[in-house]
Length: 205
Image (cartoon, rainbow, N blue to C red; front, side, top):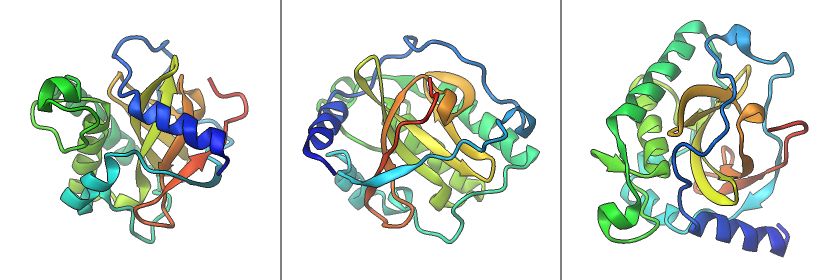
């Protein structure tokens, strides 16, 4: 990984979560028929450093930190799509967005939230809820992005129809190439506990 990227990623992660409501709206996916024919799978560019609070989170919640498993992409059936929509909406409504500094008195604290949380806490809870429904941890990857220069965390769901994004800022589920973010890094599927750098998508928003 080159040094400028390492420095930029550190800045992105320490910046915290971007605020709800500042993302331009784009159409979401309601069924597998809405997906692009090219599949929309992320291309990776080697390893990246994990967010600073990630290791402490893994020590506290190893099951939710895990990406172990033989399944690398899940078949996206209509039933699976319905589950994604149900979990995304339910978590977005259940948790009140609040910064780590406000909720726990310190910045950059990753955890399974109760009633309040910031962007990574929403993503962690969505992973937790999908795993309870039988989804493998190996296809549910915490992912660092930026929006307007501010750091943000979403959940990437790897399917046979492409990589989909669950986000606390919208109930719409989007293909990653159509999400209004710049993608930086995600949990590695091949090296548990590590992160991979994401290549820029051609034609992405």
